[in-house]
Image (cartoon, rainbow, N blue to C red; front, side):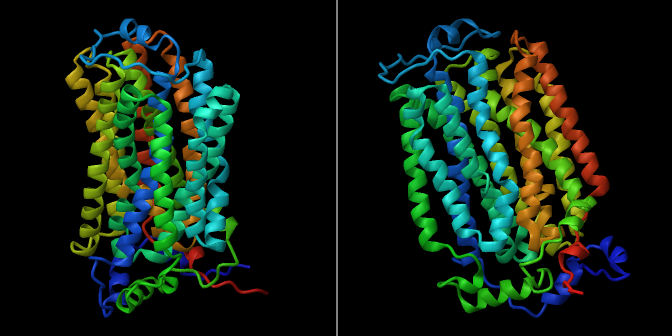
Length: 489
């Protein structure tokens, strides 16, 4: 059974940057340039780029996969339609007569597979290592992406099945990488390394949305899946050859870097990999603070991710080419601010000696309340295209700040079980991807601006609630149950 000392509750409320600095003060910090830990960050960034490119490309391709697309685009938008001056090329790819309900199932089916492998992904990564779990998970998504055109020709049911299988493969990605970073990220470099790694998701969205629109226009929609699938195959080859589960098993790491990483983590990791304190994990209020924040943030994120191309088309009247370009702007801002936020967060902790819990909560507030304000404002811009795009971009960009807030807090409170914790929080955070767009579409049946204002208000309210909950209950310390040695009676 798990034994706790009497002082556990007393130490929970005190942050540890000073303790960490005292413990690691005599350790020579290994250079970042050409280091194995930053090599891992950039390769995992490429991996998440692939994962999100494969996730979002269908949102754009779907517009070109449907019959009567061109007539719908020119007549149904609330605002005056923005015609493209470039004539439409002849396409040879098949088009389909799917109703709106079928389209909703196709777009949402990914998340039904995605939610299934979150917690198993964290457990398996801790038990057997994260390298191959992450690698084969994304490879699975790549393979089924390449099969997407065939599945679509066979019928909507086959396409839904393929998307579910893609979700199952990709579901292990974040828990696996959190588990890997538990062994690779020195405490005072976590924000930097993890934001480089995870902002591959925003970068994949930034590239995939406009590029998918261009591919659909100049080639046809099938090439969206073939091109991004080939990019994913290249990533898997690099990942297989260059990455190791931990510094101790890496063949090209320097002794200085290996010593630096392992010494900086020696007081934070559990001494065993066999025992998982499930009861303590599920009763941990700091974990539930992350759950609520993660769920709330993803409600807005997934609603915009899946429906922003629709909003651009149905309300603002942009063509498929312009749609992809403009839909990508919010995620470009999110990517940039997430990277800058990671640098700033670690600077505040390491140089300014600001407690980790203060940094995490401040970045969460800015990264969730700020987006809520600008999202609501975007609903009141009417047909002012410039202002609407500007507000949506600022809203999503500010969301990138939260990458250094609640999003990596799992590693602060329980680095040994970070993959499992992320599996738990991401399971709850996947629910908005399943129900958020469905609710949003049910509220916007007539595609009027007031209906979309309601969608934005709901998302903003959920965002603010999540920020408040995390601010009250979030912690920045390693929890006692995450480091206690297990005594078998």
